[in-house]
Image (tube, rainbow, N blue to C red; front, side):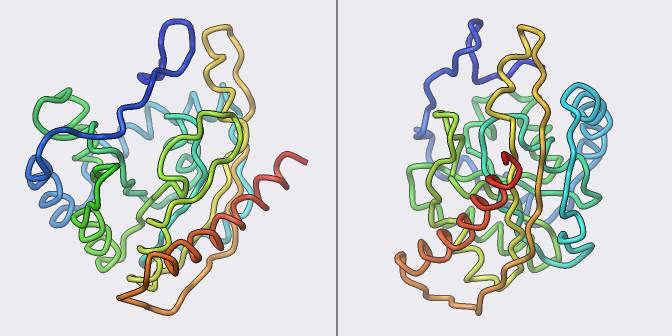
Length: 243
Protein backbone atom coordinates (compact mmCIF):
# COMPACT_ATOMS: atom_id res chain seq x y z
CA UNK A 1 0.00 0.00 0.00
CA UNK A 2 3.01 2.30 -0.28
CA UNK A 3 2.49 5.62 -1.98
CA UNK A 4 4.72 5.51 -5.09
CA UNK A 5 5.37 9.23 -4.77
CA UNK A 6 6.99 8.84 -1.37
CA UNK A 7 10.48 7.97 -0.33
CA UNK A 8 11.38 5.42 2.30
CA UNK A 9 11.23 8.07 5.02
CA UNK A 10 7.61 8.91 4.20
CA UNK A 11 8.59 12.25 2.70
CA UNK A 12 7.02 13.22 -0.61
CA UNK A 13 9.34 13.07 -3.57
CA UNK A 14 9.56 16.10 -5.86
CA UNK A 15 6.87 16.04 -8.52
CA UNK A 16 7.68 15.92 -12.22
CA UNK A 17 5.25 18.43 -13.67
CA UNK A 18 6.32 18.25 -17.31
CA UNK A 19 6.15 15.17 -19.49
CA UNK A 20 8.96 15.45 -22.02
CA UNK A 21 7.44 12.90 -24.38
CA UNK A 22 5.63 14.30 -27.45
CA UNK A 23 1.89 14.85 -27.17
CA UNK A 24 1.35 12.10 -29.74
CA UNK A 25 2.51 9.55 -27.16
CA UNK A 26 -0.92 9.87 -25.53
CA UNK A 27 -2.99 9.46 -28.72
CA UNK A 28 -3.67 5.75 -28.24
CA UNK A 29 -4.66 6.27 -24.60
CA UNK A 30 -7.14 9.01 -25.49
CA UNK A 31 -8.59 6.96 -28.33
CA UNK A 32 -9.16 4.04 -25.97
CA UNK A 33 -10.83 6.25 -23.33
CA UNK A 34 -13.12 7.79 -25.94
CA UNK A 35 -14.32 4.47 -27.31
CA UNK A 36 -14.35 2.15 -24.28
CA UNK A 37 -16.11 2.00 -20.94
CA UNK A 38 -14.19 1.02 -17.78
CA UNK A 39 -13.05 -2.60 -17.93
CA UNK A 40 -12.49 -5.39 -15.44
CA UNK A 41 -9.72 -3.61 -13.54
CA UNK A 42 -12.11 -1.03 -12.06
CA UNK A 43 -14.22 -3.50 -10.07
CA UNK A 44 -11.11 -5.59 -9.35
CA UNK A 45 -9.30 -2.64 -7.76
CA UNK A 46 -12.46 -1.81 -5.81
CA UNK A 47 -12.47 -5.35 -4.39
CA UNK A 48 -8.77 -5.15 -3.46
CA UNK A 49 -8.68 -1.58 -2.11
CA UNK A 50 -12.17 -1.41 -0.62
CA UNK A 51 -11.44 -3.39 2.56
CA UNK A 52 -8.30 -1.38 3.52
CA UNK A 53 -10.14 1.88 2.87
CA UNK A 54 -13.14 0.84 4.93
CA UNK A 55 -11.41 -1.12 7.70
CA UNK A 56 -8.05 0.57 8.21
CA UNK A 57 -9.05 4.13 7.36
CA UNK A 58 -12.68 3.76 8.50
CA UNK A 59 -13.91 5.85 5.59
CA UNK A 60 -17.21 7.52 6.32
CA UNK A 61 -19.21 9.42 3.76
CA UNK A 62 -21.98 11.99 3.98
CA UNK A 63 -24.06 13.60 1.27
CA UNK A 64 -24.21 10.48 -0.89
CA UNK A 65 -27.73 11.50 -1.89
CA UNK A 66 -26.16 14.46 -3.74
CA UNK A 67 -24.42 12.17 -6.23
CA UNK A 68 -26.60 11.56 -9.32
CA UNK A 69 -27.27 7.86 -9.87
CA UNK A 70 -26.80 8.23 -13.62
CA UNK A 71 -26.11 10.65 -16.42
CA UNK A 72 -23.14 12.94 -17.05
CA UNK A 73 -21.45 14.22 -13.92
CA UNK A 74 -18.20 15.88 -12.87
CA UNK A 75 -16.78 14.95 -9.47
CA UNK A 76 -14.45 17.66 -8.11
CA UNK A 77 -12.62 16.73 -4.89
CA UNK A 78 -9.58 18.18 -3.16
CA UNK A 79 -6.39 16.13 -3.29
CA UNK A 80 -3.75 15.23 -0.69
CA UNK A 81 -2.86 11.59 -1.32
CA UNK A 82 -2.60 8.99 -4.06
CA UNK A 83 -5.22 7.08 -2.07
CA UNK A 84 -7.80 9.82 -2.65
CA UNK A 85 -9.01 7.99 -5.78
CA UNK A 86 -10.12 5.13 -3.53
CA UNK A 87 -11.39 7.25 -0.65
CA UNK A 88 -13.67 9.39 -2.81
CA UNK A 89 -14.99 6.43 -4.80
CA UNK A 90 -15.25 3.54 -2.35
CA UNK A 91 -18.77 4.45 -1.18
CA UNK A 92 -20.06 5.30 -4.66
CA UNK A 93 -21.72 2.88 -7.04
CA UNK A 94 -20.66 4.98 -10.01
CA UNK A 95 -17.40 4.40 -11.87
CA UNK A 96 -15.24 7.53 -11.73
CA UNK A 97 -13.00 8.17 -14.72
CA UNK A 98 -10.19 10.33 -13.43
CA UNK A 99 -8.15 12.83 -15.38
CA UNK A 100 -4.66 11.83 -14.22
CA UNK A 101 -1.14 13.01 -14.92
CA UNK A 102 0.25 11.67 -18.20
CA UNK A 103 3.32 10.24 -16.47
CA UNK A 104 1.15 7.27 -15.49
CA UNK A 105 0.38 6.32 -19.09
CA UNK A 106 1.92 5.40 -22.39
CA UNK A 107 5.27 4.28 -23.77
CA UNK A 108 8.29 4.23 -21.52
CA UNK A 109 6.21 3.91 -18.36
CA UNK A 110 5.33 0.98 -16.12
CA UNK A 111 3.36 -1.26 -18.45
CA UNK A 112 1.29 -2.83 -15.67
CA UNK A 113 0.23 0.56 -14.28
CA UNK A 114 -0.45 1.86 -17.78
CA UNK A 115 -2.75 -1.09 -18.43
CA UNK A 116 -4.41 -0.77 -15.03
CA UNK A 117 -5.22 2.92 -15.43
CA UNK A 118 -6.21 2.66 -19.08
CA UNK A 119 -8.46 -0.37 -18.64
CA UNK A 120 -10.12 1.25 -15.62
CA UNK A 121 -11.17 4.12 -17.86
CA UNK A 122 -8.88 6.89 -16.65
CA UNK A 123 -7.20 9.27 -19.09
CA UNK A 124 -4.14 11.54 -19.16
CA UNK A 125 -3.52 15.25 -18.99
CA UNK A 126 -0.10 16.69 -19.74
CA UNK A 127 0.37 19.10 -16.86
CA UNK A 128 2.26 22.22 -17.77
CA UNK A 129 0.88 22.20 -21.33
CA UNK A 130 -2.28 23.47 -22.99
CA UNK A 131 -3.51 19.91 -23.40
CA UNK A 132 -6.63 20.12 -25.54
CA UNK A 133 -6.88 16.35 -25.96
CA UNK A 134 -7.62 15.84 -22.26
CA UNK A 135 -10.68 18.09 -22.56
CA UNK A 136 -11.84 16.36 -25.75
CA UNK A 137 -11.67 13.03 -23.91
CA UNK A 138 -13.51 14.42 -20.87
CA UNK A 139 -16.26 15.75 -23.16
CA UNK A 140 -16.56 12.36 -24.87
CA UNK A 141 -17.05 10.59 -21.54
CA UNK A 142 -19.64 13.09 -20.37
CA UNK A 143 -21.52 12.91 -23.68
CA UNK A 144 -21.91 9.16 -23.08
CA UNK A 145 -23.32 9.78 -19.60
CA UNK A 146 -20.14 9.00 -17.69
CA UNK A 147 -18.60 10.44 -14.54
CA UNK A 148 -15.38 12.43 -14.90
CA UNK A 149 -13.23 12.94 -11.82
CA UNK A 150 -10.94 15.97 -11.80
CA UNK A 151 -9.04 17.23 -8.80
CA UNK A 152 -9.95 20.88 -8.53
CA UNK A 153 -6.44 21.88 -7.46
CA UNK A 154 -4.93 20.23 -10.54
CA UNK A 155 -2.71 17.99 -8.42
CA UNK A 156 -1.88 17.04 -4.86
CA UNK A 157 -1.50 19.72 -2.23
CA UNK A 158 1.83 19.07 -0.54
CA UNK A 159 1.42 21.58 2.29
CA UNK A 160 -1.17 19.69 4.32
CA UNK A 161 -3.63 22.51 3.60
CA UNK A 162 -6.08 22.97 0.77
CA UNK A 163 -4.46 24.45 -2.33
CA UNK A 164 -5.88 26.78 -4.96
CA UNK A 165 -8.21 25.69 -7.78
CA UNK A 166 -7.05 25.50 -11.37
CA UNK A 167 -9.31 26.57 -14.21
CA UNK A 168 -9.56 23.10 -15.77
CA UNK A 169 -12.58 22.07 -13.72
CA UNK A 170 -14.26 25.35 -14.64
CA UNK A 171 -13.61 24.77 -18.31
CA UNK A 172 -15.10 21.27 -18.29
CA UNK A 173 -18.15 22.49 -16.36
CA UNK A 174 -18.79 25.35 -18.78
CA UNK A 175 -18.19 23.40 -21.98
CA UNK A 176 -20.32 20.42 -20.96
CA UNK A 177 -23.06 21.89 -18.80
CA UNK A 178 -22.81 18.71 -16.71
CA UNK A 179 -23.58 18.95 -12.98
CA UNK A 180 -20.51 19.32 -10.80
CA UNK A 181 -20.49 17.54 -7.44
CA UNK A 182 -17.95 19.22 -5.12
CA UNK A 183 -16.35 16.75 -2.73
CA UNK A 184 -14.14 17.20 0.32
CA UNK A 185 -11.73 14.51 1.53
CA UNK A 186 -10.60 15.10 5.11
CA UNK A 187 -7.76 13.21 6.78
CA UNK A 188 -5.85 11.94 3.75
CA UNK A 189 -3.02 14.43 4.30
CA UNK A 190 -1.98 12.09 7.14
CA UNK A 191 -2.04 8.86 5.11
CA UNK A 192 1.77 8.81 4.89
CA UNK A 193 1.83 7.78 8.56
CA UNK A 194 0.81 4.22 7.67
CA UNK A 195 4.44 3.10 7.95
CA UNK A 196 4.31 3.97 11.64
CA UNK A 197 1.06 2.10 12.10
CA UNK A 198 -1.05 5.25 12.03
CA UNK A 199 -4.18 5.04 9.93
CA UNK A 200 -6.11 8.31 10.11
CA UNK A 201 -9.86 8.25 9.86
CA UNK A 202 -10.99 9.53 6.47
CA UNK A 203 -14.18 11.50 5.98
CA UNK A 204 -15.67 12.37 2.60
CA UNK A 205 -18.50 14.84 2.01
CA UNK A 206 -20.36 15.23 -1.27
CA UNK A 207 -22.04 18.58 -1.84
CA UNK A 208 -25.14 19.47 -3.78
CA UNK A 209 -24.50 19.52 -7.54
CA UNK A 210 -23.64 22.85 -9.13
CA UNK A 211 -24.68 23.59 -12.69
CA UNK A 212 -23.54 26.30 -15.05
CA UNK A 213 -24.98 27.43 -18.41
CA UNK A 214 -22.97 26.16 -21.35
CA UNK A 215 -20.28 28.59 -22.54
CA UNK A 216 -18.22 27.02 -25.30
CA UNK A 217 -15.92 30.01 -25.72
CA UNK A 218 -15.56 31.11 -22.10
CA UNK A 219 -12.48 33.17 -21.35
CA UNK A 220 -9.76 31.88 -19.06
CA UNK A 221 -10.92 34.37 -16.44
CA UNK A 222 -14.46 33.00 -16.64
CA UNK A 223 -13.20 29.42 -16.38
CA UNK A 224 -11.19 30.39 -13.32
CA UNK A 225 -14.19 32.16 -11.81
CA UNK A 226 -16.27 28.98 -12.08
CA UNK A 227 -13.41 26.90 -10.69
CA UNK A 228 -13.26 29.25 -7.69
CA UNK A 229 -17.01 28.91 -7.16
CA UNK A 230 -16.73 25.12 -7.19
CA UNK A 231 -13.75 25.09 -4.85
CA UNK A 232 -15.37 27.52 -2.45
CA UNK A 233 -17.95 24.80 -1.88
CA UNK A 234 -15.19 22.20 -1.45
CA UNK A 235 -13.58 24.44 1.19
CA UNK A 236 -16.89 24.81 3.02
CA UNK A 237 -17.43 21.04 3.05
CA UNK A 238 -13.87 20.48 4.22
CA UNK A 239 -14.34 22.94 7.06
CA UNK A 240 -17.52 21.19 8.13
CA UNK A 241 -15.72 17.83 8.24
CA UNK A 242 -12.93 19.26 10.35
CA UNK A 243 -15.20 21.03 12.83
